[in-house]
Length: 206
Image 1: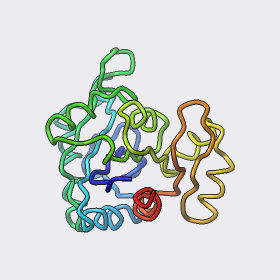
Image 2 (image 1 turned 90 degrees about the horizontal axis):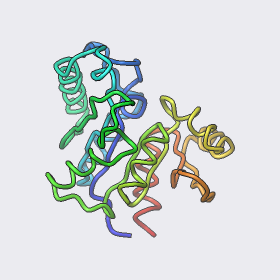
Image 3 (image 1 turned 45 degrees about the vertical axis):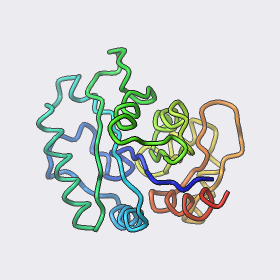
């Protein structure tokens, strides 16, 4: 397996606490251990990219400026932990807009790939929703990891992965998924720390 150079991350429920249509930068709150885990990835020479659906913009619940203020706050908080986000991309559209950038569609991947010369086989997607998993699959990334923070536990159960989720949480780690029907992650991980542990200790060793 080639070295994984880039980690693509969902935002709400994966890196920060999901506040449901977050529009106030004062509400940005890192999930426990996320800052340190992402700092570790940066120290290993990996680049971090945020890819997030923000339908609250399309629904008229908050503005692009509100989103940008939250993005800047998150970047600053991660920098204080020693982590640096190379770039963020977001889909501002409502679910019924038929856009190509709302995950699991791959428009956000295409813009990052073209802007930064990313190679799919050297990238991993980490998120708390099956849409994130589908995004990674559709973009043909090296792997997709479903974390159990945010909506992840409910999403795992929806996908028939309750046993894997229970084991990952019990062991405070990760469990590989061997089922192959439907859009399923390669791994279920208790959080982003565990997801990155799997990348460095298992995926890159294959």
